[in-house]
Structures are given as C-alpha cells and as structure tokens.
Length: 143
Image: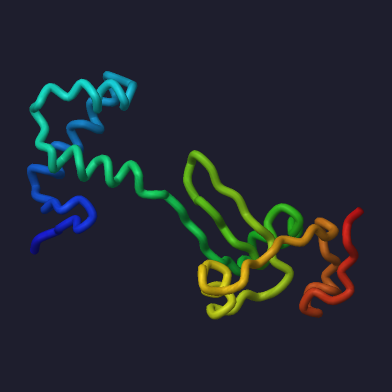
C-alpha cells in the first residue's frame, strides 16, 4: 500500500515518516521549530520537510454534536445536555450549548459553506427544565 500526498506531490515512505519523527523529536532538544527547520543540516530529504510542513499547516479542528444527559445532570449551565464540542485537545477546548436536539442534517448545514450561516444568540445561562422540551420557546433574552 502506498500513501501519496497530492498536495505536495510526494510519496510518504517509511523513510519520510522516520525523518519526520526525527525532526519532531529534535524539537525536544532544540525547542525552537523555526531554528530546527531553517538550519536543517541536509540529513533530511525534501520529501520529509514537505510532508512535515503540510502536517504543520493543516488546520487542526474538531467539531462534534454531543447529547450527554448523564454528565449534564445538575450542571446544565456548565455542561448542557445538547452541545457542540469544539477543538477537543489539551491545549484548548470549549462547548457551545444548544437548547434542543441537533439532527444530522442540521449539523451538516452548520458546517456547510453552501448554506446560510448560523448565528449564536445570547439567552439566560440556565434554562428551567420545563422549557427545555419546548424547542426554544419561552426563552428570555439576557440583558
């Protein structure tokens, strides 16, 4: 099986992967990626530098709809039952609470560039349980 980067026009071989790992490992001692990158001693192939550059410039992102009534119980303002988890990593993560279930079609519409943009609205932080099932009706705006 061959892995190929059409963007960089490079075949990702075992050697390329090994060199990428070596460059990343050298950062532990160098500490500065720009210095390690710019002062390459020629021991790495251009293919490994191209693949590493591609990986580093690829936008890391994560977006997931989550329905979590167990964790939300008693702390809906901090962990809404329905929410979007965004950028789940040790360096940063956050949630956007939703007032109701999000269908797969709605989720696709949110991230589609071909659809109208969705907007955030600011409402009272904690919704009483009696209004949670009314699909967003009777919600008061926070002033």
